[in-house]
Image 1 (cartoon, helix red, strand yellow):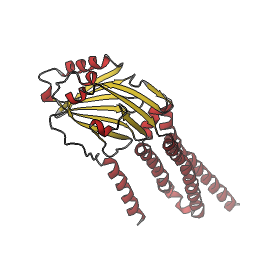
Image 2 (image 1 turned 180 degrees about the vertical axis):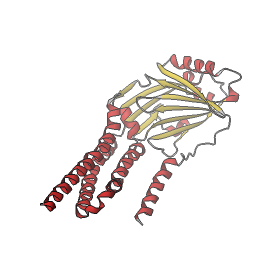
Image 3 (image 1 turned 90 degrees about the vertical axis):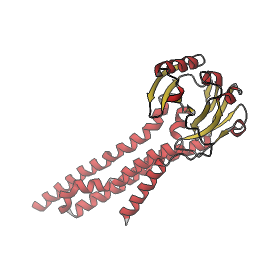
Image 4 (image 1 turned 135 degrees about the horizontal axis):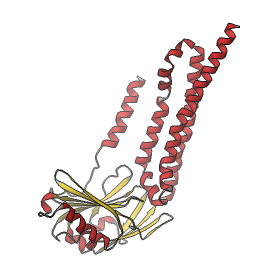
Length: 306
């Protein structure tokens, strides 16, 4: 019964992570240009997915250079690369100085549409997706997204999406998109506390289960030959806590919010630090318990001989 419930929980978690984003935006044309603006902290980047038939015999490297030259007129492009897919070519450009302001949870950036899309025909169909942390609130040109033609689908993992379907010309008429964002600090603090609480839960679980393992072996010394199997069995719950912590980090929005709120390096410490600490608690408790069991069994054997 317990095994079937555990399998059901794991299947549910995998289904959530694998379930695709549901969007209520206008269906995308098959040969439409796709541009993703990823506002995710330290690795902000633009992704252009250009159908192969829209290249008009232009070499992929030349297309990359043309887009990069346009972007470099407004931003500092840190790196760029492209990869070919079945129906399109994906060009990725990492932007080093995307934000005009990034301080104390307040975020500002501007995107001139001519710089972003000026290399394409005005009547070209486009899907523009803007992805940001679920823990941030954004406005564009001091207006709501819907008034500018953007639709907000359901959030997915750490990010929320705003999707625009239309023609390039309609975006060019808006000239510049001024993005004003703010991190929801109270929600972020609460979520961070929950995230760090996994460490406390891991300590309690490891302590209780390691004590139970010790009592079992001391009470039934004949099971010592199965110690490795029992040891792994008692570590299943602590391992699930680690998995749950990783899933929570991704699903809560902290994965991207840390990158937006903290400077590079500190954000990585907040992301990875608690998970590494939680993982380190496993050997700390169970290796110590194994040594205690060996010592106590040895002492019991000596007492019996005497």
